[in-house]
Length: 286
Image 1: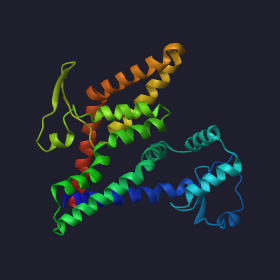
Image 2 (image 1 turned 180 degrees about the vertical axis):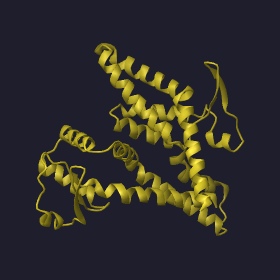
Image 3 (image 1 turned 90 degrees about the vertical axis):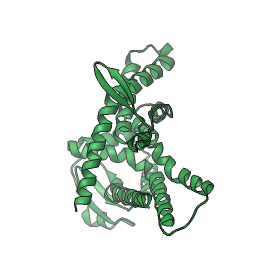
Image 4 (image 1 turned 90 degrees about the horizontal axis):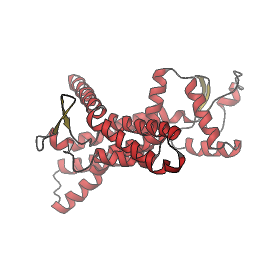
C-alpha cells in the first residue's frame, strides 16, 4: 500500500507544480512600462488568458502549448541564448526574494517532471496491482522495481545535474557529484532508516558526524549543484588557463564532495528529514 500511496502523492505533487508554474512560462519582459492593447492581448490565438504582473506581460497557453509558442517566439524575434539569459535576469530583477526562490526551484525541478511523473505512475500501478492480489514472479517484481525505483534512488544525480546547469556550472561535474552522493560504498539511506544498515560515524572537528548516502534527497543535491557552479566560477577567475582543464574540475569535485559529506550534507539532510516529518504529522493530523 505504501508504494501506491507514494506514487499517487508524487503524481499529484508534480502536477500541482505544473499547473501553478509552467503555464506562466509564456511571458515577455518589456523595456518600458507601456501596456499593450488589452483587448487584443486577451484575444491572441490559442491564449487562455493575459495579465500583467511583476513587470511582465504574461500569456497563458497551457502546459502542452507553451513550449511550441516559446520556440516560435524565439525564432520570430531571433532571440539567441545570450538574449534569453538577459531576459531571465530581467525577470528575476522584478521578483521578490520569495518569488526568486520559488522560481529557482521551479527551474531546477520542472525539467525532471516527465521522468518523475512517469516513475510515480508506474509506482502507483505496481502498488495497485499488488493490492488487487496480482502475483508477480521474483524476476517480474525485480523488473518492476527497476522501473519504479531507479529514478528516485538516483534522484540526487538528476537534481545535481539540473541545479548545476541552472546556476551556470558544468552539468557533467554536477552529475559526478550526484553519483558520489549515492555511491554504493556509502550506507544506503533507506537501509539505514529501515534499520538494515548503520551509518558511518566519522569524527570531524570534535563532532561525531553520521555519513549516509542521499538516495531520494532533494535539498542536499540542490546545495551540491550550487556549490559546484559557485566554486567552478571562482576558480576560473584565478586558475591559469593552461592548467584550468585539470585543476578546476579536480578542486571543484574534491571541495564539493568534502563539504557535502562532512558539513553541508548532514545539515541539509537533517533539515529535510525534520521538514518531511512535520509535513507528514500535519497530513495525518487532518
